[in-house]
Structure formats: C-alpha cells, structure tokens
Image 1 (cartoon, rainbow over the protein chains, first blue to last red):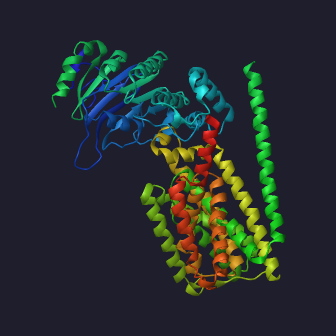
Image 2 (cartoon, each protein chain N blue to C red):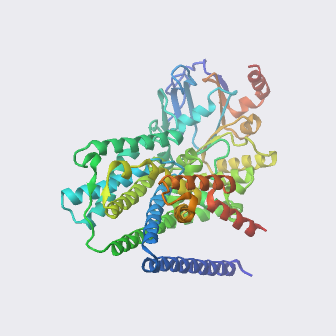
Image 3 (cartoon, one colour):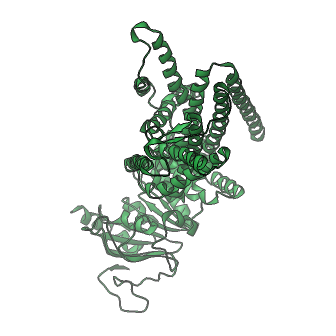
Length: 263
Length: 337
C-alpha cells in the first residue's frame, strides 16, 4: 500500500510527527528532523524515516530534495536543528561519526573515498580502526574480508589509487565491512561506474540484504534500487512525500520519475 | 609450488632486505659518529645544525607531511623549549640535563593548548592560525619579566674548551636525531601513520571509518612539539645566549617546512635528505664564494636565503614531490617494467 504523508491514518501505534505510523524501537530512524546548512534555508523540513531491521529501505527523490542531507544526519555528520535520530529505540542524535561504528553503523560515502596513496591492505586496516588495540582480531577481520572478496587479497600490496573506479569501489565496500556493521547507509552506490560494475555493486548489496543487515540506500538509479527495496520513501522539497512497500511503487515508477523531471 | 612455500621464500627475502637496511643505517650512524672526531670545528658546527634541523623537520613532518596540516609555527615549540631550559637553569638552578626533558614536556603542554582549538580548523585556516600563534608567543616572551625580555638569557657554558664543547653538542644532536628518525620510521609503518595519511588524503571518510581524526592530529602535533622542545633546549645551551628575535624567528619555521618539502613530504627519508641538501649546499657555497676575489669575504647572512630560494625553485621545477618523490618514481618504473 502506498501512502501519502498527508493521509493521517487513524489506528493504533504511535504517530510520528508527520502523522505516519512507525515503530521506531528497532532499526534506524529519524523523527521530525529539520535541518539545513545556513540559517536562511531548510534542506529537510520535519522529515521522518525508518530503516526497518534486516530490510532494504530506499530513499528516492529528485535532485536537491535532501536525500544526502538525510544520510548525513543519520550518520551524525550534520546535527539537526530539531528532531531525533534513533537506533533501536535509543537516541543517538549527538553521537559523533567516529563513535557510530562501535554502535554497528557504517556509511559508504558517495564518489571515490579510498585513500589513494595507501595500499589496499592499509586501506582495509583503517576500516578496522576499532580493533586497533587487538592485533589478533584485526588480522582475523582482515582474513575474513579476504575470504569474502578474494580479489582484494590479490591487490593487497597495490596502491589503492592505481586501481580502476570499480576496483576502488570494491576496496571501499571491503573497508566498510571490516567492522561488520549491522546497519549500513549507502549513498549513490553506482555514480561514475561502468554499467557492468554497477551490476556487481547491486549484487553485493543484495548479498548484504541476504545476510539480514539493515540497509538504507539513497539512489538516483531508481529502477535498480527499487528492485532491491523492501520499503521505499520519497522526498520532495525536503519533505516526506510518498512511502510504501516495494509492490506499490514498481508500477508507478515511470510516472514518478516523469513528475520529477518536470522541475 | 605451494603458496605456503612461496610465502616463506618471500618472507625470507623480506627479512634479508630488512637486515641489509638495518646494517646500512647502523653503518651510516657509525660513520657520522666517527666524523665527530675527524672533521674541523666549522664542519662539526654545520653538522650539529644539520642534525638539529633533521629533528625539527622530522617532528614537523608527523603532522605536516603525513597528515597534510601545514604548521608554520614550529618555532613556537622550539622557542618554548629553549626558554624553558633557560629560565629553569638560570633562575631556578635546575640541573641542565634535567631541563631538557622538562623543556620537551612544557612544549608538549603548549602544543596541547594550541592544538585543541587550532586542529578544529582545516587547510589554510590552520596554517594561518599557527603563524599567528608563533608571533603571539614571540611578543609574549619579549614582554615578560621572567624571560628577561628583549635582552634575553645568558646560558651557563660547559667547562671545556671550544672544540670539546662543539663535539659534545654534535653527539647530543646526533643521538637525538637518530632517535627521532627511528620514531618517524616506526610511525610511517604503523597504523598511526596510515591513519595520518588517510587524514591528508580525505579526512571525512577517515572519520566515517571510526578514526578519531582530531585526537590523532593532536597526538601528531604533540609528538612534533615535544621533539622541537627538546631540540630547543639543547640549542639554548649550544648557542649560550637566547633572545626572542632569534629564538622565535619565523625563519626557523619556514626553513623546517622548506627542508621537508625539498626532501619529500610524508616520508621519513625526506628530512634526512632535504636538510643536509640545503644546509650543506649553503655552507659549501659560502666557502666557495668567500674564495672568489670579486665577492669578497663579507657575505651577508641573507646569503642562505638566496641559496634556499634557488634550491626550492629547482625542486619545484624538477621534482615537485621532493627528492623522495623522484626516488619513488624511478623505483616504481624499475619495478613495473
């Protein structure tokens, strides 16, 4: 069923500020978040989202609708002016990014983010920063990543900057998985990659989904993202717009995209 | 062939190459130690100065080279170290040897006070703030009573003849330089070093991955400041007279940056190459120029700056990543072909 943010459902459950029912005691959520970068503009206006545990939640919207800002808020890179971020019912709005890994969260940032002058292995070791004081657990984590992505083992002595864009993406994914996060935020995973590589990236996200990890995916590649989604949110002008299960969205995709292209 | 065997062969080769490198380094240090008794006085002084600048440049390199935070105020910590030694020794009768670790500690505390606010800034804002703080310290030291103001502090002299004195400082600087270079080498090959490089290359993903970037940068600054403080204390005893204009001179900060740049930023070898390249070249040219009849004997002290400028221009044209960048490029070519 697809709902509009304006339809306030009458029924049981705790209503979120914009009126939608959401049980925020599990998964990652934001409630009534208002945020912006300068005093005179609002990028997010009273937005509420919930990434359900073990599901893929996709956040869609036209350019400038506030998708990436929502991710920044969820990971603590930006503080909201009002509203809360909750992880499994616990408020984490003010927890700084470097402490979120310990809570089981991880963020795969948009664009290239490998450290080009470090080798692949050194990149991975930084991903295991939390295990810094425990050499044995670090090397176990490293071995697990090499077992999971055998290509990385082949490249481990190479400088990350000498790899192709797709290969660097794999390093970034491997680096993120060093901490084996439960909740994964992914920002535009396919930007700037060759179509063949894009398919591999979505296959990897599908694998993370099979492993019951909670995933929040922000994407412009609407068709691929919705194919993976369990639940979809759309933003428009920094407000909650439509939301619903995947089935409700699949047949309306074209109309939705067309409506975004109008402006 | 099994991969385990391959791995063992590779490990053996790596051990051997480490052994050779260790022996090479030990031989170089042994040679320098021997030079201390063989060469004439003016060269002992020049080399002492080279060792001191290598200490400063290695200390600067931890934050400036690996993490890419340009600190133009390294002289602050150097000067604080020198003045700590001076004040404690002349006014509180602390034993000179004890003032050296104390100088390192005081410089570290100053770095903490400076670093906590400064390291919240990035890029050029950080660089400007370090510059301001170094001027601020200079003004403060010039106007405080305890530091002797503009007239400075006369340090107690060692009870030996001039040559023995120089040799003592030569070996002191040599010893501390070896320790500093060793520290830089260890940092470069530890995860602390990787994390600093990660901060230089892209600070946000590093933070996303759980690296406490601000704390790491602070640690890098503190380490460098401690080294500079210790170097400053020994410098104070070496020159036997310290005053604010010379001890807190902007030239020292700039030279440390230039020498690291010429050698190659973010490599432990960079300062080891860059410092002697610039200081020894300046010294040799000064001797040569002194012998030329038309230049006369009275070369102005600004002569060094001309030489440094020429070297910097040459490096910028021919080896933009410093001498080490050149070495790495050649080595990379040999490995890939």
